[in-house]
Image (cartoon, rainbow, N blue to C red):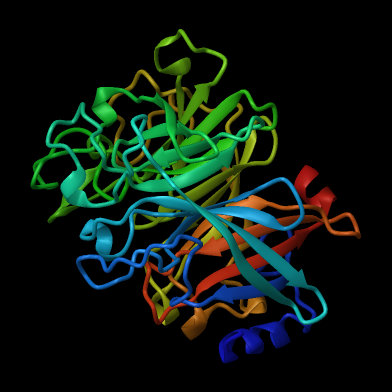
Length: 397
C-alpha cells in the first residue's frame, strides 16, 4: 500500500461527523489500490500503438459483485489514450479482501475475459474501429457499465453506440438492445453545429438492474446534442437521460423503453454510474473531471424515478429549465466522496470514481458499498477501491 493510502487508513480510525458525509452517514471502512503497472490474467503482452502493453490492468469503468465471497467483476473501458490505441476489450474477475483492523483492501486478479462479437472476433476500443455510418456497429466497443444477470450473463453498456449488449460468461456477444436512431453517436466533426445524437465521451455510461430483475436502467453521462446548447466546441445542458428497458418485452420496440431526466448538479458534471436500491430508487455517481484542489463534485446521489415524467417520445428537451409538464427524478445527496472526513478532498482528490456496486453484508448487518476508480491506464496512477458501510435504516428511510 502506498504512503498516501496508509495516511488515509490512519484517518479512517478517527471518528467522523455527519455534517459533510451526506444523508446516509456512510462509514468509509477500508481503502485499497492496485498498481498502475499491474498485469491482468491474460498471457498476451503486446505493445499498443502508444506504448502500453495490452495486459496492463486498469481503466476500471464499472464494478459488479460476482455473488460470492469478496469477488467482483471490474470492467476495463476502451483502453489507453482515449481511443487512440487498438485495445482488445475485456473484463476481469478480481478478489477484494478487506482487513477491517488495518482499514485496507488487498486486490488480486483472478481471471480476465475478452469481449467478442458473435463470430468470436475480439472487440476493440479504437476510435478507428467506429463505423462511419451511425446505424452500424462494427468491431468497436467502449464498455462503460456492467451488471450480472441471474443466469451468469453480463449486460454491458457501449458508449460508442450508445447501446447495451448481453454477453455470455465467456465473453461472446449474444444480444443487443438498440436505442432510437436520434440517440446514436454523432459523426459530425463540429459539436458547435451538430443537431442530433450522443456527444463523444458523453454516452451510455452506467447500468442498473432494479430489485425485481425486470427493468434495466442505463444512464447517459451527459445531455444529448439536441438537449444542450453549444459553447465553442463543447455542449452543455441541465439534464441527462436515464433509459429504462423492460427485459420481459422481447417483442416490443426498444423493449418498452421509458426515459427519465436526471438534473445535473452542474452543467460541467456527468454521470459515471447508476445502481439500484429497490424498484424505484437508484444511486447515481456524479462527478466533475477535475482532480486535486480543482475538484469540486464527486458524489453519490439517491434518486427516485416514481412520479417523474416519461420523455421517451420527446426527442428534444430544453437545455435549461423544464416546462411544468416535465418532472425530472427527485434527487438528494447520499454520500459525498469529497467529505474531509474521508480524507480524499483537497490535493488528495482523485479524478475518476467510475463504478459502484453492493457487496456482501458485514457481520454487524450493515450493507457494503464498493467504489472503483479509473486510472486511465496510466502506469504511475494506482486504481483505487473504497469500501463503505451503511446502516440498513439509512437506506430504507
